[in-house]
Each structure stands twice: as C-alpha cells, then as structure tokens.
Length: 407
Ligand SMILES: Nc1ncnc2c1ncn2[C@@H]1O[C@H](COP(=O)(O)OP(=O)(O)O)[C@@H](O)[C@H]1O
Ligand SMILES: O=C(OP(=O)(O)O)[C@H](O)COP(=O)(O)O
Image 1 (spheres, protein in one colour):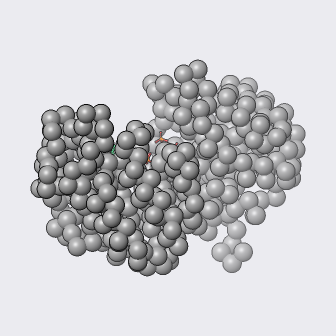
Image 2: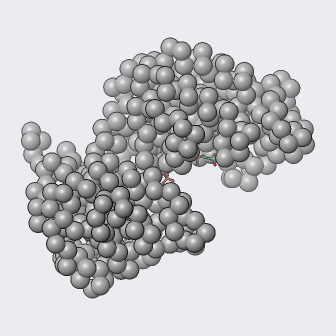
Image 3: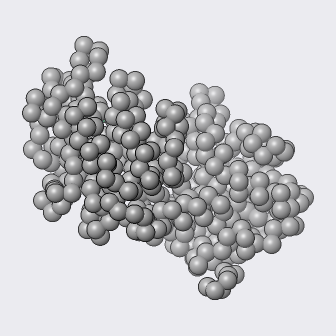
C-alpha cells in the first residue's frame, strides 16, 4: 500500500519532491523540451497550493554526456509553468542547500542542483545503504516528508529514489500514482491484447516479449524497428550487411538467438515485418522480405505498406494495445510512415497505452497523442510491463508512516 498526496498534511510541511525532468538539452546547455517538466506540474502546483514548502530533486543526463548540465534552466521554466517564482540553488545536500530549504515559506518552491553531480547518485545501492549516503544524510534533517513523482527513474536504485523513502514519511506524487495505476493493472485490460515492440532497446523488448507471452498476457506481439529487424534475422531473412552490422555494433548479436528461441516457443503469436523500407537514390524504397537482401549499404529503416496492412488486420479485433518504441527511424521524414500509421491506428483501439519517453515526445511532435495513457517512462515502463518490481516503488511501499491497508 503506497501513501499518496491525499494522505499528506501539506500545509507548512517541508517536502523533498523527486521528479524526473531528464530532458533534451540544447547547444547552450539549456532545456530544449519541457514535456517532462509539464508532466510534474500537477503534483508541484498541488503541493505549493496546499501550502507546502517544496524542495525539488532531480537528475539531468549522465556523467560525461553533453546533456549532463545544471538544473538552472529547468527552474526557470518551472517558474513559468507554475506561475510563481521558483528559486534555484547550485547545491544538493550541503549547508547551502539546507539553508535554501530552511528559508522556504509556505507555498515556496526551490530546485536543488542536479543530483548526479555527486558520484553516489550515479550508483545503485540497497535502500538501507542508500540511506547512509551524503545526499540522504545531508537532507534528512531539513525535510519533513518525501514525495516521489519520478516514475521514469523508478527502475534505478539510487539514493534520492530509495534512500530518502527509507528515512522519511513518503508519498507517491500524482504522476507516480497514475503510472502505477495504469501499468500495474495491465492484466485487467480487455482482450484481445496486442503488444507492439519497436525501437532500439532490443534486449529489454525481448524480455518484455518473453514475459507477456509466457504469462499469456499477449494475444499477439507485433515487431518493428530494430526489434523487428532482429526477429527477421532470427527467422532466417538476410537483411544485408548494413542492418546486420548495426545490430552487431549495438552489441545485440546474441539477441538474435533469444529471438529465435522465442519464435520456436511462441511463433504463432509473434508477427514479423513482411517488408522493409530502405533509402535508394535518396528516396524511400520498399522491399518485400522475399526481395531481400537489399543493395549494399542499404539498411532496413522502417516497416513498409504490406506490413502495415498485415498489422492493421490484427489490430482490427484488438481491445487493448500496448506500444513501446517507434516502428522506424522517425527522425528522418522518409521513415516516419511506419510510426505515423501504426501509432495512428492504435489510437482507434479502446485502450491504448504507450511506453517510451522519447517516443512519446516524438509522437506529440507528429501530432498523434490521442492515447488512453502515455507513460513518462521508457525503461521504467518496460520493467513494469514484465511485472517486475521497481526499486523506487518498493521503497515507497516499505516507507515509514504508511496508511493502514483499509484506509
Ligand atoms: N529500423 C531502425 N534502424 C535503426 N534505428 C531505428 C530503427 N527503428 C527505430 N530506430 C530508432 O530507435 C530509436 C528509439 O528507440 P528507443 O530508444 O527504444 O525508444 P524510446 O526512447 O521511446 O524508449 C529512435 O532513435 C529510432 O531512430
Ligand atoms: O530518461 C530516463 O529513462 P528513459 O530513457 O528510459 O525514459 C530516466 O531519466 C532515467 O535516466 P537514466 O537511464 O540515465 O537512469
């Protein structure tokens, strides 16, 4: 049983709120897309409106990456979104941070510095050990409560996600609540239930496929993107050197054997692309699988019309569809068709659930957003779809001061 904001007496309470605003960053090191910030506005505005003293904790990027930047521009944007001043302090758990938190009045909000500027926050710990890190020990004394709204990071066992809820009364924010509500009860959705696995996270997608087929959750698994390419090769199709080299370079070669095992076990419920699109003379060119391999240097970048017809026929009967990852290289106009049409068809199905942070924002840019639920998480959503527990969710379940089960 996880406590929510409904269980928290907010007025005058100093709350540490973990959000996931890990976002694309522009060449000047500033926020380039505010979708993830907007997702947390409900939680944050509720807390300030109810008189909370709000300290926001978040990570941005990974050490060494171009997007590993300060949260100053996130704070600026948050101020616009909340319609009130939001302070930023370039400290996370030191005396400067504690001073900023102690200085909050009711309804005030401050954004602390990128948690991953501190090495412990980029390591995974069990909750008890995480509770003895500098970040947790530094903040514990100035916080009355902890709210986790960072569903997209809930598969990470890092101090701000599993350590703070070990020592503070803890609550799920509104994003976390709605994600757990939808993704935690997939088995209650209507059948036939179809999973579409596309994109480039091949090992994760194969884990999901195994799990949902084994548990009988999926009536059909439709494959696309790099995932579809791996299944085609596993089925004996020669996709040519360019696609094979790409899969090899990504370190996914072993996944071909796993895909072949899956086809052996559940081939009747797994649908493979019937054609692919390549770039020929600078234009999109579709090739049936019987016409493969493609020319030298031609890579399978999207699914083609014949695959879309086949997949649409399967979708005709579906009551629930769960999609993860694009059908092709949607960043290139020539290879957007598969994603546009497949996801477009999915919006007509009564229950449509999309996982995958990057895919979700791309879909919004394509103007396709009429789904029952668009998850804020990529990796976290995939983990939930395999019915695996997420460390940050478990930490919330085990946190002190939980409401009684019959509350
Ligand atoms: N056939 C393909 N070949 C190469 N890359 C692909 C192909 N299909 C999809 N992709 C790439 O997959 C990436 C997104 O996949 P993924 O990271 O799994 O999605 P998400 O971020 O939503 O979880 C996109 O950058 C897209 O270009
Ligand atoms: O963007 C995130 O995950 P996602 O790419 O799976 O959606 C989260 O912020 C987690 O980031 P991480 O994968 O660097 O731990």
